[in-house]
Length: 353
Ligand code: PEP
Ligand code: MN
Image 1 (tube, rainbow, N blue to C red):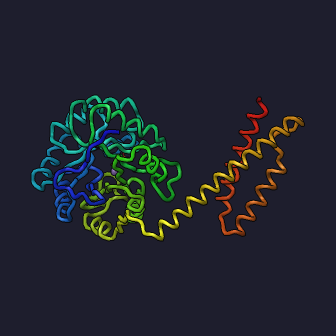
Image 2 (spheres, rainbow, N blue to C red):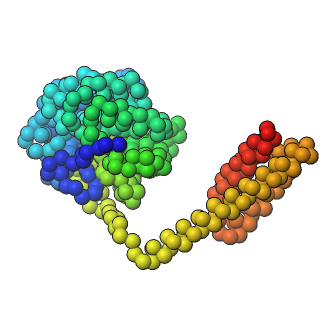
Image 3 (cartoon, rainbow, N blue to C red):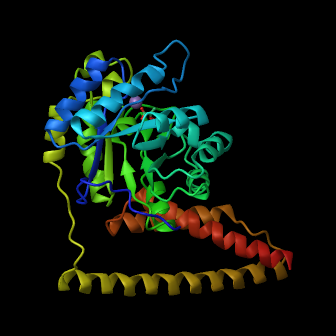
């Protein structure tokens, strides 16, 4: 995908790119006070929701367009860049008219191709960075589709924001991280910057620091974190916001592992892994061929593919053996079930012939 850098003049190119600000703009004082304190701690990009997609009616649905001049003040008086969520073409036009610097598409919106297309159409011919949050449901193609719609409108400064995936069980996370999904996104579009939103993944302040560290260890490019001058009194997402001072503390204790050069030891170990993977593949291929021969035998002797007792024995014995070798039961069960499923599929093909 043809993309351009999302870095704006004066913004540090060092990882992580930081975007911070309240969940919602509430009052001019709250916006200015939060922005001043973030600015004093080196934050260059200020986020604030103007229109809030609330799950239930009756919640605070955002201050609306009257908040946009407050963000203009943040930009003019503090020199910070501003970022706002857009969900409709009207939002896009209002943001552009008020000089907002960065737009982002929220999780509920990127789940809806009609809405994303409407935003994309409103962006035709505009040059502004657009960040696309993952859809609420764990559907990578839907996320990529939203990014492509924005890209097709001619936008080149695009980033993806990982904010976790909706789940019924909210015991630990408000939205499950499912890190493998953003990792797969990065594999498919390697030049797309990835920003993590620990606030909406965690849903509670205590989880922000560990989530930021995990994102850094997974090579994310940036972090978007909700920060409020008085979090307990926030009109939305109070439990997950931190003061600018706490944010500063969290960021200053982050360990950024940026070493890309590999040492000789690591190279040697990786060579061993490559060889072992090779052996694993060869063994699996051989196992599959034997399984096919068994399939042919079963067909000739009119036997069914599945012999439950044999399958059960294999599972039990192998898992016990694996445990003795220091491996995890659940892990081994998953591997064996996957191999068995594939064997059955091969044998089914043979039966059909
Ligand atoms: C937000 O950033 O305040 C927000 C509404 O996030 P999301 O779209 O990830 O739910
Ligand atoms: Mn929020």
